[in-house]
Image (tube, helix red, strand yellow):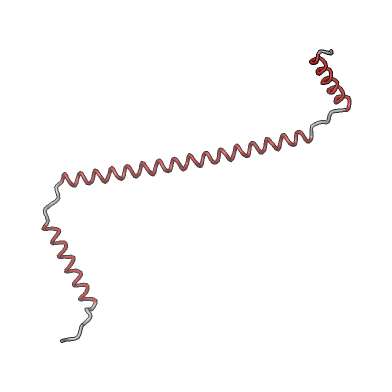
Length: 120
């Protein structure tokens, strides 16, 4: 029995070329595909592509909407913080009431309480 001989590159390439040619010949001898079937497949592929494009468009719009909402929330938060800072500073630097103003406010509350109790 002769020893096993590894096929060389040219022999392998020749075998691959022959297999391709045989597969192509087999494909050519098959019955031709009906034009209606081809049109139907093409229409189905176009419908899939359109559905995929619509889906990606909706997804992109949802991402953009979410991004806009995040920016709006951040702006609202920053505005609220600025207002709080402004109110705190206004309270800190507001003029203090004098002793006379405090006494007048206290007397007004006392008089109002007496009037409510009917001792006026």
